[in-house]
Length: 486
Image (spheres, rainbow, N blue to C red):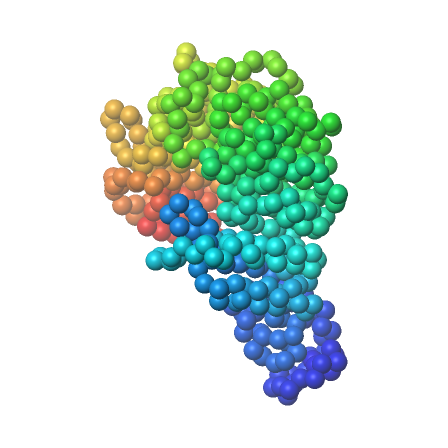
């Protein structure tokens, strides 16, 4: 091996000589898990030379700490020295080409004393100066850093990047850039109320990204999202021509700002509204978000994730394949719909619930729903409105339990109902899960499961798996017996 690479191998006699060129060995090593790859580096000098760089495909630097008030500091000078040495090693000629991902994060140290003598971002400039050496870098992440204009210029020296994640970062108001803008494919921004992307009123921190190359944007904070919509997309002469995936917070002001500029994103295929941890009662109180029904042409989205109230305002019939639906009604705090509300949205008959366009629903192949509980009413509505459904995932917030008032079903009843429900023949995957499962009505015997398997295979020839509840009842067709995991 060492002779093939013109590298002396002290341990060449330990392993058989296999006549493979180094390029093939490198290709093989790239598919090995990290632990196995570490063992390979201990085999011989030649393998170590090839495999060691692959151990550094993902770099994480955590040189600074956060206190209870999110103040950033470096606890000890030794941390600076150690991190410098690590950056220098990883940017060496032998290692740098293997780096694909780089993260710059804080860490919480219990009992750490605030040290104001060492600037927390003393290492940030060193890392930014090093980034161009990572010629194959695909993903870059920052958490709790303040990026100045000079640092933004260094970031743009990368010229192109696959993914950029900014978590609770501030970006200095960018006056002008002599260097070319960063060609970025995917942008994710997560901010709290105190750290916004773009300190200036115009939010020019976003202007460092070339709008002609962005394919995916995910922004969770409402203020940062408003800056994106009003001052970046709205001021772009031709819009975001390559943007296909967009995630925005489910906020009334953001939705109203987004609706008029929908036409500036001609290639948008996936739209997601981030589901808040708790649905606020002021978000919104009407069924239509107070939006005009006929404002701009709708999009032929392939994926929509968000409240059912916004579905008619953004999705055009004929293309939707993946639907993840919840609700902003204040009936629940987590967005879960009652079966009555879901039935009204799918089948109508509820004056308080707007009905989804059946033409939008009939092309859906993957359906994800959040409901308070499962009963016959909602399952029958699903069977009627989704004729080519392949995958159904239902999360029940209150668990599966038998209830006379709610007519909720437990897992045993659901298993029995599978044979009588008019599920589409295209169904392949069915999963109903809950974090707070109730007790079962009984224990299914192996004979009963075998009978269920045989009957289900006849009725639904494409069905490959059924998973019910957190106990994970998994019916598999791979063997002659049915497995029950409890």
